[in-house]
Length: 161
Image 1: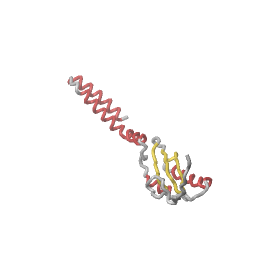
Image 2: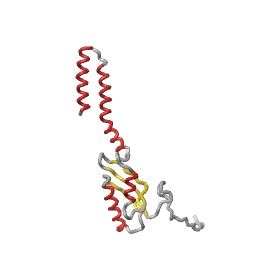
Image 3: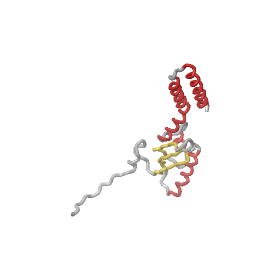
Image 4: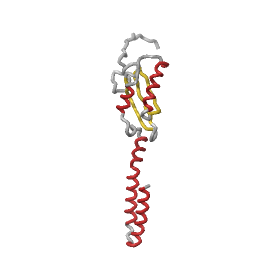
């Protein structure tokens, strides 16, 4: 609002200056200055909008802190492939893989509730949590290679076509 008031005063002052001096160049100069003022006052909104559109980490949130809090939850062995992004100014989403002991889904539901309770403290209310029971061989890479995976050779035989 202050920027709008300053712009209005600038327009009035520019009109008076043009009237008494006859310098028409004052008008485009004021237009450029007002444009800069608008961008300067709106910069915070522009940054936040770009962060939401680019699905960036919400402002003030630390990925390591959220990961650490999730690892402290009873039943969670490890957390990886964690992504947090903004859906709006105060609405955040999360997706991740969580390593837990091998158990039936009905038992793992309690762990999921504890995870969501912790994430609510970070204003993360939209979650997709994938439970895993086998640790990835490469924790920084996509989970395609499993530590316990064994390659079994099978017999090849001829087929008639």
